[in-house]
Image (cartoon, rainbow, N blue to C red; front, side, top):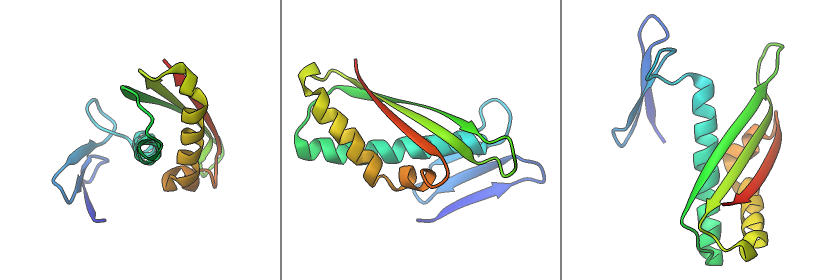
Length: 130
């Protein structure tokens, strides 16, 4: 893994990966702040892990949505205190909910970013079939 982050004298910058993708960093419209990137990394890691599990289990669905919310500590350092990850599965058979629930639990167990954040925050996982 190799990424590059360039900053101006102020908190304005860009994040680029090896494949040429980039994000604008900052506090203005159209830019990402650090604590907005962490949930995105968590959701992406969790979903990639979840996909690997459901593919092995041959579970079928149309799409998924992940909603994340968290609470930071008031005291410095203001690391995450708690995180709620809600996985919404669209177009799946309701009778398969226990299998999707197990797949989500396994994804949480094997997602490295989920487990890293779990070292400092109380993690809660919910599944909804919609």
